[in-house]
Amino acid sequence: MTASLDLTFAALADPTRRAILSMLLEDDMAVTDVAEPFDMSLAAISKHLGILGRAGLISQERRGRVKWCKLEPGGLRAASIWMQGFGQFEPVDLDAFEIFLAAELGAEPDVDTQDQD
Image 1: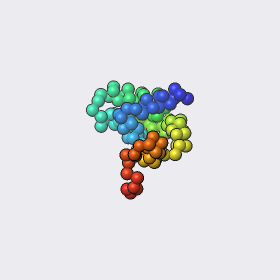
Image 2: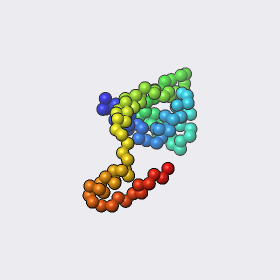
Image 3: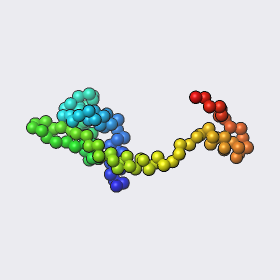
Image 4: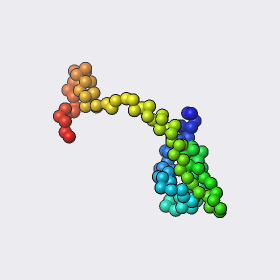
């Protein structure tokens, strides 16, 4: 599972690949249509698509002479489950934490304790 997560997060680390995934949210697309908005070669786009494919985030198939890309939403399942594990922690109130530390260390807190909503 660790290797799968590594592939997923490595694929998601690149802004071009994230943009491609966003585009594929709408519908399946031909590789040439995926490449159109980017200022890079078709070969470079194909490399990005290969990385997304190896991570299980997209699939590609030939329809006639055209190669199509399809989003595979299940590819994010393992990463989503892994990230949800971090949701068990309560958010930290940094102002309260700084006041606590100041009290423990005998210093004045450097925060405004008034609620400014």
